[in-house]
Image (tube, one colour):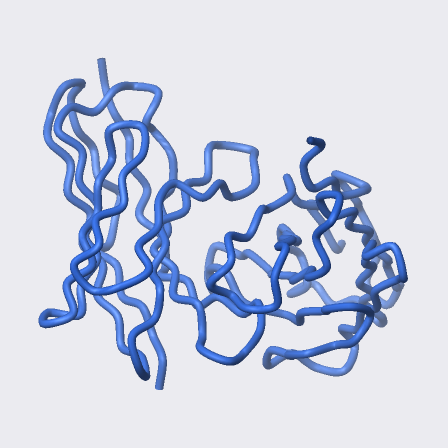
Length: 114
Length: 113
């Protein structure tokens, strides 16, 4: 079974631009969550989608948004990029609707904002 | 509120040494608990889990026991290898909040030959 894939793996953007990251979950998984990982703040939850609906949202500004498609693939968008948005963005998929189900992480997208 | 606290790293050990990484949590109810591992340049992998009190999760020689009385889930391995060098995260799934995980700050382990 193919794992979680994320594209692109690396991105360099300029402050003020916007960016879209993509995540393809494991086949059959309906839940996709997104996390931001930085050296200073660690792993922080961004949002979670289940069957195309955002079910939970972390404490991030509205510049961070996401969506999920009918095939469970998900995208997250960051508008008006700031230097502090430089991070590793990880997505995770799971079969079920609760966090008690095992979550499988992708390799991440490394975003650098200059 | 819900939180996870891990011992700070980095932890440096010699090969075949005993490993303990402490993790304590604060949560409502009796959640499941996870340990994830992140190897350099990679995403997170689920290492082991426990779903109820006194459960012992184990995988690849690592073990962790869910202790409700001390709200702890310490990770142990009897004999570490160089290939165990990675960052280890304790994680708490939030009850009734879908896929949301609360992670500890991570503990970097470096094993020297």
